[in-house]
Image (cartoon, rainbow, N blue to C red; front, side):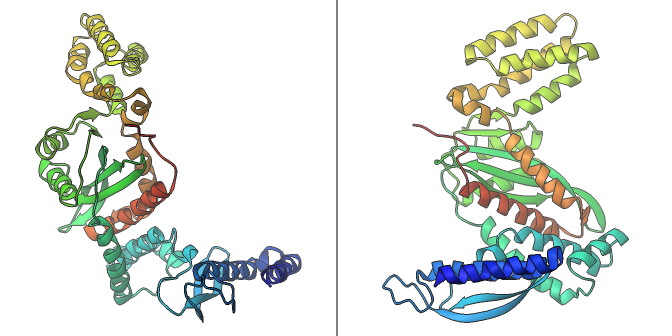
Length: 386
């Protein structure tokens, strides 16, 4: 029965494409999506239609019509229902959370009268211009509830913690402020990455970092063996206050960048970069220390400021040598955060200025939730051993 049904659908799709070409893609997508949802419901039920089996988990209960806007047009779908709760086609939800948040952020700008012609154009495409404050409030409430559940979920043991911040323009108190978005990443005992939480704050001052880190502890974060971050003053002070005994690894990538500020001649920049890279790529801590001493001695005469800076700062980038060599490449920088920042930047640049803190946290929260879910469902970031 299932084979004959699939063959019939396939023939119907082929006929549509042959008859209408790309103009028939809307109908093609409707057929494919409706069929995919039926297959997914059957798997959820553990039974085919009208099949009698002890493995059955639930019973089919008709369909519910749904209009879905896509790039090929509006699809008229028939969403399969089940008698008891617990089933909803995955493709209708997966990947749309951040899209809903983006639409909402733009809608808020429109409703509050701060939209530009460009934003109105985006709203026309994504939401239509008939956006009421009631609709915005209802959508915001649903998204906020989902984000709050994610932000307050219980944590556990994460051997490695990476923390970072980026900035977004947010309207606060009648002014546009560059607000800090604090983000915490963890690598769990299975070697999988996960985004643990976010917080939109006025700045990276110690008080904001401390409150954010303390909230992670209150949610059950334990077992940290190494923290990786940049050397922001407020963050360093907060880490000492909340995790005083945990080793800290300063991001080697940022150290490389910082060093260039102390190179007095353009012609020497590449040489200095290679010298520092050799230290970081040493086989062990002893060799790294030896190379560091040689570099300090070499630059002491003609670039004394660089030599002093290296002596005071490079050691903070060598903490990772306490761990097995196979871990170091992943743990010596905060590049994991940089890649997430690129994705956030790609999505938030459309908004440009968030109308309030909630709007900013809602969109970025939706983005990182999706990234984190993909990480957890993906392959290991680190192959941890005892």
